[in-house]
Length: 262
Image (cartoon, rainbow, N blue to C red; front, side, top):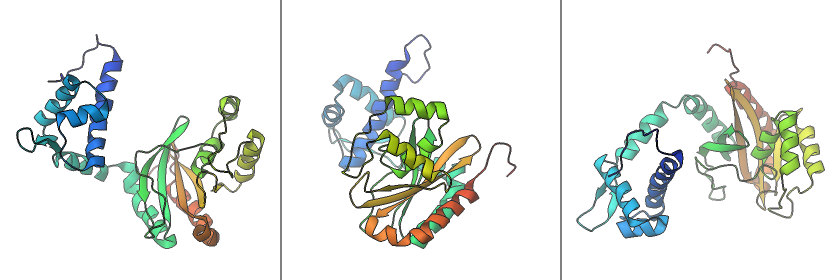
């Protein structure tokens, strides 16, 4: 069984691997949606059976998985759902953002996403999907796919200080994702400069053909967040006159800068 105690004499890397493998184990159950045996999990995660056994035994001991029957495979219990629900219900950002972003989604009937900037990337925290079957598949926990081809990525870049932005352009390779993707660093700089006064950044057929997205940022204390509206170009393009001011209004309402009393 895995030891859960902290051991400062051990290098950090094995602990990181254990955490990664444990989380990937749950992701595997989510994708397979069936009981999985030790060999199933070991093979899918490409780890030794002994290491896989240690993880499963620890999760079973803590009540996060259970064995269906002897040699019948393992499956997660509802404890993970209970823990996740308790965490999500107390998330200070999501509690503030959820209602207003749902209202934005309902008003436009387009998918709305919230992501948080961390360094040179951002993680999606909230994904509110359009009622239409034709919509973008992004799940919470995913990273922004591309900085130069997505509206969220452009919003992130525009918020960097000049030195950090220069460093990005020094090392970045603007690989085309679609025929419309920006591959010129000069053109991308011009796009960022042109969009800064309005505060709305656009990607049109750049990250996926037929997809239009707009993004804007807001500050919550010392962190930067991005709100994105994404939909089929043919549909969202007709709503931009409503979507742009609504997006900016939402970001103004969510903005809380350092020192603000709320």
